[in-house]
Length: 505
Image (cartoon, rainbow, N blue to C red; front, top):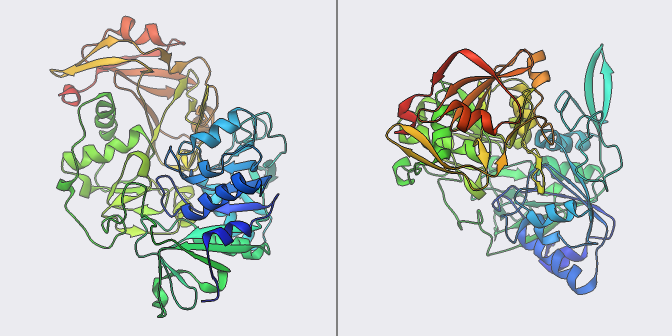
């Protein structure tokens, strides 16, 4: 067990200007929190390290105090290459203030990059990101003016366009598991996800860097071979944190780790709200036997609706963190599931997604424009990033976007099978042109992908480069409550109908 060091010693191993790959997902899932906090303490005490480049496929944090927000100090981080920032508002603020170079790439691409680096290939070549803000002909994944280096390129292969994400080199890798055995092998018996810890560790070792693993327990015995997630030969140092929590919300829940199954009835019902209305309408696009992905935010309510209405076992919900089956959890611990059937490597989940395995996906929608483009990554002073949305939306057999019609201050009454607008929101979400193209309506049309846009008061679909209004909520006025709050005039379907009243019951 000579590999065991303290968290303070681990922080000392990180030198200025190094590239650090970090495992973890929102809500403290698989996050080496103790090590991150000690890096922060060292920087505040000694002013070192400085100029770090961070690389993390997932958003890491809890929107308050952990994750990459531990490192959100001017000077500590030079560049943050992230899959998502919504769980790390302090780091997002540094990016908006131009105090770090901010790059955002699809979560699946970033996850698969670890395998590419591990095998010393040129990087990741994929169509994921074409015609979105990731495309270098649009923004190149650069989220602020400080990000000037081109990190993605368009190439031609056999007459087709592809995006090439060149490989990186990692100096340090920070991973987490539950237990380290006497040979340094890492097991995950209390973790709620696997993510891409093994690929990250292999990528760092292939780069000539060091891998530091945080665990909760030490075992004097050898782990069972099939229980080992990260072999000890990939691990250089081990930090023990006896206070390590499964997520930021709970110390350990065996139903989230896949170790037991508990009744869904123990979970609270979703209160009636515009969010529930959207979830109920979106859920009508589900079919028995479907393999489904739910995005973070409003779409995660669809799982609650399916549970309450008794058909959750007729579906297979998945989330990009590698969870298959069960009921995806919402809120800050989005990324884990209650009673999962399987928990696999995140990069393998994206292999399935990129290969068109999803029957339907439900994703968030911050803005929709007249060409059917959707923005879910950057609006005004809100910097969140795309997460897995681009991999998922460009490859699913059907895409359903979910969001409220307006935002900030909107008050609505839902009763008697109808909807009444009491106070209109201050922010319009149906705009002439989105602030950032997370989903390209033009690309979806080119591959003949079925798409639907669902709000609590209206439903739209794209057709021939235009957005068509197909349904309105009972109780709302078409002119006063819908058209008057859009920055473009949609095509009104000749078969315009009311949304089902039971959605509002």
